[in-house]
Length: 248
Length: 316
Image (cartoon, rainbow over the protein chains, first blue to last red):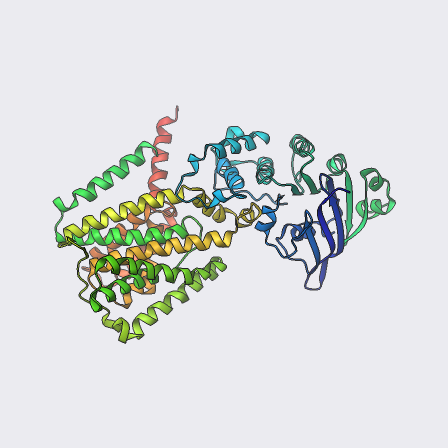
């Protein structure tokens, strides 16, 4: 059996009286592309935050690559090989694109503590940063600050940042939300082209993107998993059609 | 560095080096003070301009270093070679403790640093058997290490200038290093930094301690200049004034805090000669800065230059 990259056991997250996540269990094999779908308020992003360490679950366990990380901080999970994007673009708007990528590259190693050597003396980092920008088609804007990017370009930078922390598990929170069809195509192609050494867990509303990329789909509704299966199984399931589209 | 910045640096340095040839003792004293407070403002700006943390307790490190050096020199006759490093060490140790403030952000950070600052001021004021209370510690001699002794204000001016220039170079290295970039990353988005693998609280703590160490060095330089230290040195007012210096001059730059120090100290000297409420003038300067030059004088100069060159390059 393949090792699992992500294991979530009976995870519960409550906000006061609200049970946003009500006992979710998930197991994602290494190399798999897993898509989480579900209507608004299903608890997808909350579940995500518990996996990344932004939120601490009320109950339950989260393991990455066989290691219990429930009580680890976000930066420690990143050191174990987790990378993520945010639902609302979270890039360093005041810094140049090159600096954005540089932070992502040195973030997972000791170079981030270097104090007596200027950033520009790290030639290899610069090259790697430019490659990272090239991958999302932003290399010609390397010297500009991120505030000048369009919405779609910020989404692309967002993904470039997550990829440059060299994740073995990539968590994407609606990477294509709000993008034009051509941008959407570009991002989904990038995700599809990722090597299978990277496990991908992704929240996605766009059914075409979701079902095109996924090996397996998990459907959440009101904080619980109502179905897990292949894209075809999910599409054919009447219960899913009911909660997701509001009619059978 | 572009050419205009090199020019500015050279002009400022040349003016500073040549100052004793055209300025009398009063102006020399003021200049020494401006450079020392500029260094203190620079230390505050490592947090303010690069991490976004607004500290209002930097007078504490400044004062603890000044008191330590003064007490060692005056009361125990400790030579400068030990008394001066001990001052920097004492201030830095205090920063290691006060660094817990980085557990908070925004207005809570400001409040907690104000409270911490008042502790130091209170101790300096009330523990009079040790600190000399209101009178402070007086008769601090000029520094001397073995046969190398400072014997005049002129010599001390050059010593301060040399030390502060070295600090500015080190500071420049620090803020352009990966660590320095990390600080600006935290200012821009702390949540993103965490997800990229940064232990942001530790980064901020280290920056806080470095900043405190720099403020302590300024305190030691100050006590040898001023020849005495009293609770005012560690007061809330000093903490506020140096933060203002950084903002007025241009936060996030190196020359800015020094320009701010020059403007504020110069203005105070000038205004207080004929107007008792000189603090009110400081208030007006600050309001004007926030309204019309939020990036400080350096930012204003850059904007004006950009506008000018922009017009020149415009084909129409």
